[in-house]
Length: 120
Image (tube, rainbow, N blue to C red; front, side, top):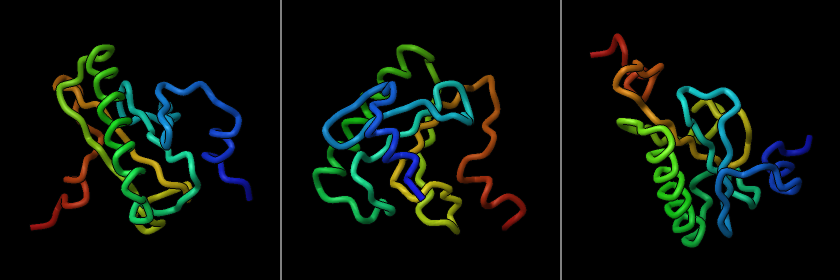
């Protein structure tokens, strides 16, 4: 089965931002206004497979996307997340990072704390 994210990269979809290793697109099912996906151009399944250059260019893509979202949407905070593996909730087997703006007047739909609800 073809990889959805590899196909996006090959078809030069409308990217919000792009650098040598990553491209950024709006999430199709956003948790909040401005929710973005940072997707590695090279097909790798796990974040733990990234080399030093891929990590550095991920930082660049995160910072640039955050700056754009700060200017366009003025969020109060962010969640940055990776679902690494099926048991973690990953649905597409291709490295991608979620950048989710959060707003004080809109309660978060989740966040890492949702994993611990009802636990002491």
